[in-house]
Image (tube, rainbow, N blue to C red; front, side, top):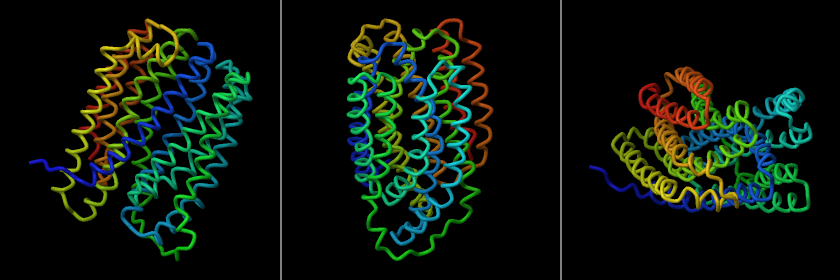
Amino acid sequence: MISFDKKLIKGSIILLIIFNLYALLNFIFQSSMAMMLSIEDYGILAALFYFPYFLNIFSEAIQTIIAKYTTSNNSIEKSKNIFRRAFRRISKPTFCIFIVYMILAIPLSFILDISYGLFAINSIFIFNSFFLPINRGIMQGMKRFFSLGFNLLVEASFKLGLAILFVFIGWRVYGGILGATLGGAISLASSFLFLKEMNSAKERTAKTPDIYGYSTPVFLVTFAILVFYTADLFIVQLLFSKEIAGNYAIASILSKAVFWGTQPISKAMFPLSAENTAKKNRKTNNNTFYNSFALLIFGILACLSLFYFFPGQIISLFSGKDIALSASLLFILGISTSFLSIANLILLFKISQGKTKGALSFFLVLVLSIALLIYFSHTIYEFSYAFLTASALFLWSSIFFLR
């Protein structure tokens, strides 16, 4: 019999409120950019966001790993040790990725017909994406859900305000991408304030058994989720005209509100499940998952109902334009993202228990999904249904592959 998990409900409510405020600010950001920029410029902005979406693979993996070991050690003194070790180990790879990115951006600027200057500004996301999740992972692992959520609001608020200002004064796509990157940088700086007690804490060595063996499959699974999450946006940009790609991007980005709107449930569940696993409390852990799953389904049904009954109004509110193509795709893409949201919850639950065998199988699923999207791309509707099929396959894989 399922009983209410008070810690999960409390943490989920805090994160749901704050994350959805965060999602609302991002919605206003995307809506403002869609209104203030031409469809072609908005398509370029969406293409530039492929890179931070890709970097989210590293961000989510780092935050998940840090949260897991912070929960296991459960003290501010040991958290300080985790913080210091993580920053030291991540610094060199971060600068290497920055250099490689700046070199690869040269041919990409010609292939995608996007100014190299825009790619250069985009590089700020590299530092935000590698360092910020260390602090957020410690907050999550220590169950400081309010601090974690507030830090997200700092990022979204500055991102929105600066981007609107820069676009308004005529910087167009440059203004949008500069506002977004500076918002992340300000959030990184402010995240240290939420952990200021670590400065005076006496550092103690944290136990991180098999951290490298655990990190690799976590990265692989996170890679599969987030590459799958962004694959449709990238492929549609290559296979369709700028106008159709821009219309699809509006519907796709809106549909992904299902994923981001329900993600707080998974974020709150993870440290609780990891803690229950450490205490070998299987019954409580299963109850935590069932509570999370029920909350997730409720959130998904609420979003899909809006997409089904009010697609035109949602598109119009978001973009300031009546776009029939985007409206007709919204519900299909919403179902696709719902499958991904459920898969994400299942995978995080398994990872929190140390179930990481079979992570490589997701690469096969990912390759098959991309092949489906490329092959079934004669029309944008065929492409959308291919994405729906691939999402269902990914959900099935999350249930059976990871052990």
